[in-house]
Image (cartoon, rainbow over all chains, first blue to last red; front, side):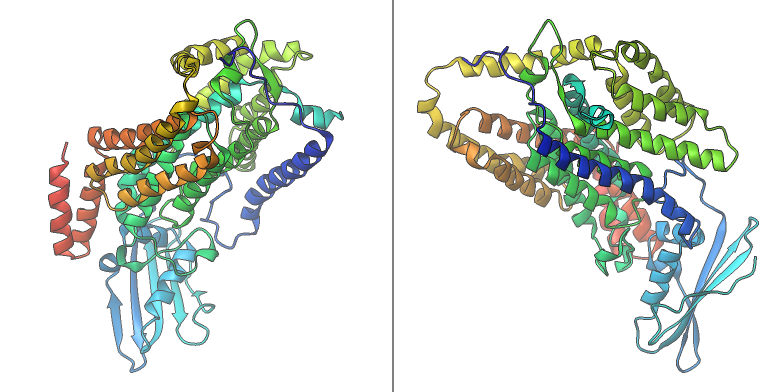
Length: 150
Length: 376
């Protein structure tokens, strides 16, 4: 029978193992210090992922969001946001999460006959109204512009 | 050793990495099932998705994909908490869990990122048996566990940034900063050459407890952090005694089983029983009635086969059976959790409400029927 008293603890790491582990530790710790600092360079201030800026639950802003598209023949159509995507994505757009707004506008540009797409956020708080335009076509993935005033 | 090396490679009571690994894995399993599965109906709606990282491209995770990943992660995590963990399994849990939240911004809970960091640390933990961590009754076994120190430093960095951002906004920051210092100090408390730290560390547990109880925080973050703090800050005698008490039944069972002298002759029976168990365990998921869960549980059994590998043929003979038993435990726990909680109802109810809102009345009706079946 294997004695329950004899199973040894893990051995102390050798010098070589310590060097390898130290390199991993240094890289892992350095990354953890650097990643939250990327917040300072983010264009989108509402994007607080990986920063530890807040561990508490935040309230969703009270905004009204509408979207419309314009076809090449000049016809304008409202986009029924609530019927197209889940409510959580709408919340993100109301919070001005640029990644979500851009992705949504790009998706609306997928049909060939769409010229441009616009999304407007009207908020009750101090942020006022903001509009996002994307002109479809060659520059569709880069052309999102923030045209609103505060 | 240089001072910095002494910090990372100094001795730690083995009870701490043993308990913290199992505590986080077990809690993570129930967290994914009870808190994340009910959110699954959001996934794939309108074929729209934005992932956390651009390398996902235009991939749109469906509800069944998301639930499958959660079932896989949860069952594998719990099975590793129940029996001696395996490094490959921890890698798979880390990969599955991280895939689960990174595939969509729909999951932007900050502590899910923290748990992924923890799981990376766990990959480098020693895969201790209960006998190695608790067998010496007179004194707690110690050893060099740099990954545990890294785990503590990871936690300290989180509190450091919470404090730093609070300070930058003119808010009080002393409590999270005290938590940060506490973790850096407590990671060294088991070293015989630092008796003063051993005296001071247990009192510092008050800082994370107060911090997490004083403000409303997302999900189960307070449970994770208070539990982790209790393991990291508690005096070694307490944590050793707790660990011994918790693992006593398991150690007795394993020791009784290894007493038999005819184990080698039974090796082929163990082999076939293990294989049978791997096939039967995921079948429990047939009773769960959630999309993707059957696939998730089947993948867990395949992962377990990968983990066991050569153990199926070679000594110690009983180990494969314990691993299969832990897989059974994981699948069974998933079934009981789903049957005893509102998670299934919430999943179908939320799905029905969203489908109704979008005007998809057929889907709404189908989901509502399911929700009615599991209504509390």
